[in-house]
Length: 311
Ligand code: FES
Image 1: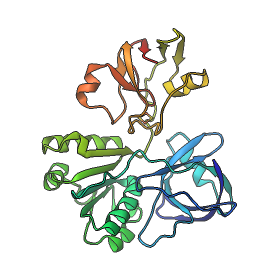
Image 2: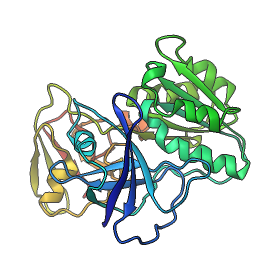
Image 3: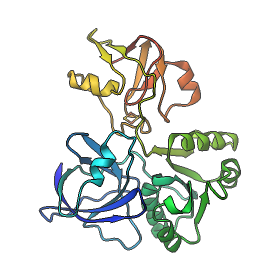
Image 4: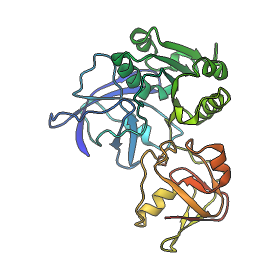
């Protein structure tokens, strides 16, 4: 983690605010690829990840992010919105679990709401490289869609906007038209699942559909505690509602691999030896979910009283 100063804070919509961050010691920033995110250390809520934004012509001496205030969320977005220009925070190096795959095939970027942020950087890099792409941006209404006008100015040939309150996107029709594209989708869980199902219906192979969720899985009313047994040690831990398997196991000294903690990168995937998982990720296919043999332990829970995990 490195100390960064917030050098600019500006409101994009009622709920979305952009921040520009610069290293406190003036050091150069590491190179990063489109789709990357940084973690902000926010104190009480812990660290939260935000996608880096790059527009055509941007300098590379600052990080740019945009954050949507989520009053019903876990406190991370509220903590970011409380930051002011001049504040100093700890920031991680960029990481990327949502990379553009090299190639010549056309690319389709599909954004829902604030999920537009990593796709702005992708559009900038695709445009600079001359690779063909289309950009589909959906939101509840024009007024709540951050950066819509600037996107129109920067990518007028590629951008189509869809407004739920006027003419919502017809995902099956849209995906059918871009069936030869590689798809990058960022938005809420329902939209990602709908694009996945439209892509499957259009015959697009699942490895050509890349996704990133922009919110972590919220607790669901009625969540119950369950037990997790770590197979290598036999240790058993209780996972209460509102806490994840990763959080509980890690604070008890179990060494785990993970990244996004939203259920979209696949890094925390774990074999299930016994018990029935309650899948809440967007990584696994329907067949994998139904098999019950693997799960993403950053977001998924249990339908049975105990899971035995291959850890
Ligand atoms: S850490 Fe990314 S899916 Fe679990």
